Length: 97
Figure 1 (cartoon, rainbow, N blue to C red):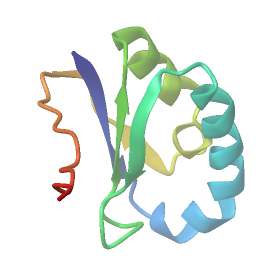
Figure 2: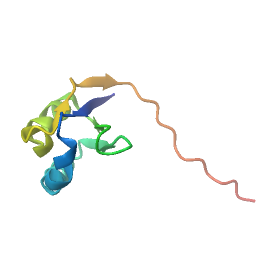
Figure 3: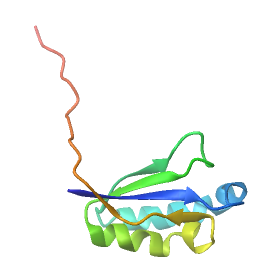
C-alpha cells in the first residue's frame, strides 16, 4: 500500500514557487533519505497545476507537508492523505535471440 498527497497551488502561489524551490528541494532531499518518498513532482503545466507526492507510510505522508517550505510559506495546500492500492509493472525486457 502507498500513500498519496496532492498539492493544490494556493492563490498567488505560482509566482513564488521558483523562489522557494531551493528550500523545498533541500527539505525533500533530506526527507527522501528516510526511504519513505516513492515519487514526487509537479503536474503539467507546472507550477500552476499543483503536484503529487507518494509515500511508503501514512506517517511519512502526514509528516512531509508539515515541514515543506511550499506549505509553510503558503504557496501550496496539501490534500488529506489518501491510501493508494497501486499496481506496479516492471519494464518489459527485450527477448534475446
